[in-house]
Amino acid sequence: MEHVVTLSDSAGVRTVPLGPGTIADFHRAVLGLLAEAGHEVRLSGAPNEVEPATRFAEDREQRGYDPHGAGRLLGALLSADRVFRLFRSSFLGKVSPVHFFWGSFDLAVTRFSGRPAPPHPGGIPHLPDEVTREAYSHEVSSAGFWPGGAGAPGGPFFYSYAYPAPEGFGAAAVKPEAARFDEALGEFVLDYEAVRTAPDPDAALLVFLTTTYEAAADLAKWDRSALECAPGVPRVPRRV
Image 1: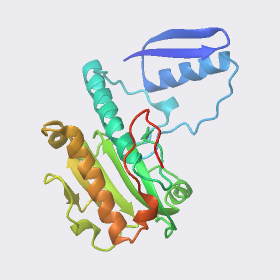
Image 2: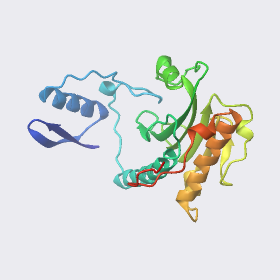
Image 3: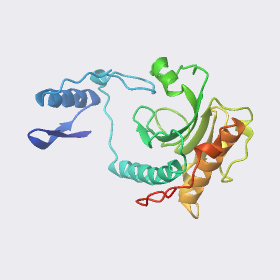
Image 4: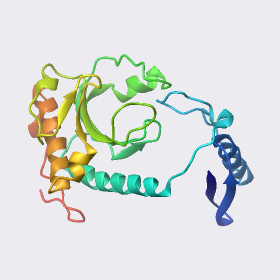
């Protein structure tokens, strides 16, 4: 695996080739470059939400790099981000930015009802329960895109879930027709291939995001009239 690090500091931007190596080599080299630039960085030193959680400094397994696959993933993430941002714009309440979880490796956007939620049970691998409980301190409807991997079955797919899941959520009627509720995951899923091959991929994804959110909000009796608005238009100020 060829490693290249781009470092920006007072001396400008430097691209440093690190040559072939392992995660441990990359980790050591990056920390060395940061120290050279005068930055003292404190890291937990291990991945989150995946098994096995080998510490970076100890991970010497050789891995390949597929630039074509990485490029395809980037394209999928950018396309999903565009639709997620449009979906996000139709909510007036608290809503997260469209963000990427480097641990579970999914792109996500989360809407909040504003009401407190029961304490989350935790138990997510290699993620402190206090972090999970803070993230789910209030009711949410969350959707995202997961490319698959990390030893888990399935993927790539889009997903949507609610916490706490209201009664009847898994039996709700959602669109498009290819969407389904996965009992093991406790969330609605829509295969990436179904979106990619749809006549209008953006519309297929948007209707999935919208109908799964509406199912969660209606069953949990969110105050939708106070929380929702018309979708925004890029670079156009919203009119009152």
